[in-house]
Each structure stands twice: as structure tokens, then as C-alpha cells.
Image (cartoon, rainbow, N blue to C red; front, side, top):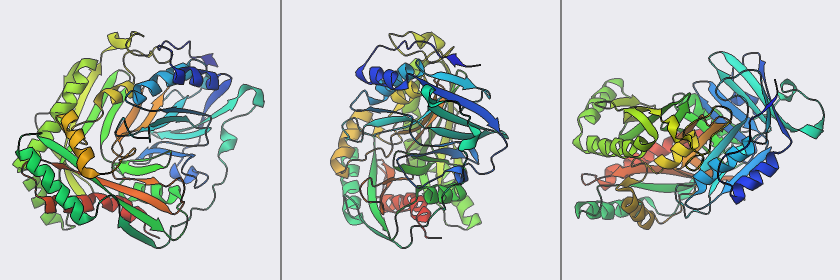
Amino acid sequence: MTTSLGAPRAVPTEAAERAAEAAAGLLVHTVAVDDVDDLLARLPGPDPARTFSWVRRGEGIVGWGEALRISTAGPGRIRAADAAWTAAVGRLRVHDEVGLPGTGAVAFGSFSFSPASPAGGVLVLPEVVVGRREGRAWVTTVRRADAGPGSAAPELRTPQPVTAPGAVTFRDGALSAEEWRAAVAGVVRRIRAGEVAKVVMARDVVARAAAPLDVRHLLGRLAADYPGCWTFAVDHLVGATPELLVRREKGLAACRVLAGTIRRTGDDADDLRRAAELARSSKDLEEHELAVASLVRALRPYCASINVPEAPFVLHLPNVMHLASDVTGVVDGALGHPSTFPTHGAGGTGPSSLALAAALHPTAAVGGTPTREATTILAEEERMDRGRYAGPVGWIGADGDGEWGIALRSGELSASDAREVRLFAGCGVVAASDPAAELAESEAKLQPMRGALAGR
């Protein structure tokens, strides 16, 4: 059955008015299809501006094309995008024959780390979305009502061949390795002087390929090498993040906090020993405790109850190991009043997944503690604009449910040079940090994107 999702209830803004106008007359149609073995293999072309992904262990959603774009900027960029999406949803006509998370109207989004960054934020409703969950697969198409009859399944056309980047060279970004290590030493001195408890310092490296970069090559390599991470692509940003900022599904919120890292050696016995060291490290446990406490403080006003593990576990990834904690909460449906939050879709209550992401960003895991002072210091010492690195990245449905990760282990494909990509990595710096060790950790965190650029 085709339905309208109702009038938007958010306070009107310029972005919301533009989104509602653009969405008028759009038809969204989701149908079941035969099981899709490889979502990423369905992506038809290499364009990073029109290719979207949110895939983990072979499940999730991918999309292409652009039926609707919402762009925002400034301190309120995430909430403005949430309100604009609500306004757009109110004008869409949706026919969803599947009814799973990720079906119906879905927008992919990414947002800058800093409110001052010109990168701003974006939500895009693709023209085609293909999804897979628990053995069920679907296709969603978006078209204008005056485009005539159509169906979703024929859009699964044969993709163009995926191309490899060829030889890749690397050069320093904003700071050389030695300059960055010196900056970390300066931050350690400021922490020991009592200015802050923790600062997350990021660095960038610029890669240049022999051939134009095909975003699908990067996605395929990342998904194969890091299947436990969320492999994402949104508006030139691509990566594989191990950190879930927030998922909202049927009234439940879930967050994964990562803070405290040790590099893997490749020797199983040695890595087990190093994992045990990580679990006992006072420096890493302090860093992790600060990150969890920060997230819980930010999440508590939006949840009726929250469950916090007593101790972290060690998350094993191919390149590093992290201290990790999974925090869950019951979203407070009483917070759905339109003066506070938009109410998404039919029956959506309480703050949306994107509203929760706005409340949580930036976490101590990517900014520091206290957040305001730490982000001021990192902006001074990094001497670069992070763009959308370490910002929220993910998707939101018409009902407000969705998944938002932190854009880590990622790169920003250049919009002006098809052969260039800017890679990022960050490390939590506390009083006990050793600058040389932090530099080595940053190299380990650059490895996923370096490996994805390999030519094979």
C-alpha cells in the first residue's frame, strides 16, 4: 500500500523548507528481491559523489544516484539536517513491501567534525538502494510521480568494471611525522599542567594514485580486510570504522565506545600477551573510562534507562586491538514533542538516531575531555581542518531509526583531483602518553586505508 508519511512537525527552517519542496512528488518504492550475495558488487560506477555504502559482515545497504540532497553548516548542522529530513519525509509517498530497517526512504549522511569546518553536513536520498539483512534482500527506487510507471528490480543493471589505482605515492599532510610527534609532546605538557585530561590528536597523509580512484575498489578491499567494521561511503568520504556512535532501532539505542589501543604484531601468542597488557594498562583504562563517562553523560538526558558494562573488553581487529564498551539505553519516547525534536514518520517517537548523534558528537574518544577545552587545543595543535573525519557518518530512515558511526580509518577523495585522497588517523593523548608510541599508533590506524589503496 502506498502512503504519505504525514506532515512534518519540526520547527520550519530554510533547510527544511527547501527539503520539503524538493521531496514533493517523489515516489519511494521498496520490493523484495532474490538474496544479494555481495552488496558492494551491485554498485554500478566509480563516482564517489554518487556512491553510498553502509555494510558490515555482508549486510547493510548500498546506494547510488541522488534523488534529494540536504546540505547544512555551522553549529546546528546535524539538528538542521534532522529537521530537514523530517520535512522531506512528510512530502514523500512511500510504498514499502519489506518493512525492515533500511527499507523505505533512507538517507545516507556525513557531517564535519568541527562546526566551523566548511565541509558542513549532508544527507542524500539515493535514486536506488539495495539492502540485505538476515538473508532477506530488497531494492528501493526513488522517482518522480510524473516519470510514469516503473519498478525497483530493473535498476539492478550490470556494473562497470572496477578499476585499481595502480602505484600510489604518499606525502605529508598538514604536519610531517616529526612535526606531529612534537605537537603531541606539547599537548602532553599541557595535559600535565592541568589544562585538560585528554586530547585526541589526528594527523593526515595525502595519497596520490597513478590512475583515477574507483571508490568501489576501496570499499571492496576495506570490507574484505575489516569485515567486523562498518564500511562506509558518503559524498567523497570512504572508510571502515570500528566505532558505532549510535544505533536507534525500535526504541533502543546502542553505542560502541573505543578508547585505548595497542598495535598487533601478527604473532598470535604475542598478540594475546599484548591484549592482556592492554586490559591492565592504567594509561589505556584511564583513557577508556573518560570516553565512556563522556558518552553516558551526553546520552542520559535522552534515555529512560542506560546500561553500562562494568569493564571493557578487548576488540581484536586485523591491525590493532582496542578497549571497547557497548553501552545501551531505552530511548525516552516522551521527548518526541515537536518543540524539542521532530517526530519521524508514522509512529516515530522520541529523538531520532540523528538527533542522538548530534547530542553525542564529539565524544571524548575523538575529541577529548573536557570536550570544549580539548577540541580547542586539538584545533591549535593539529593545524588542519579535519573536514568530515571523526564526524558522524551513517544513515537514517523515515521513522528516525538508523545507524551512525564515527568516520574513522577513513579518507576523503578529492573533488578536484580524481587521483588524490587524504587519509586520517587519530590517537588519544593523556598525561602518560609517549609521543613516539602515539606516532606508531597513528601509523597502525592509517594501515586500513593504505592497504585499500594497494593496486591488486
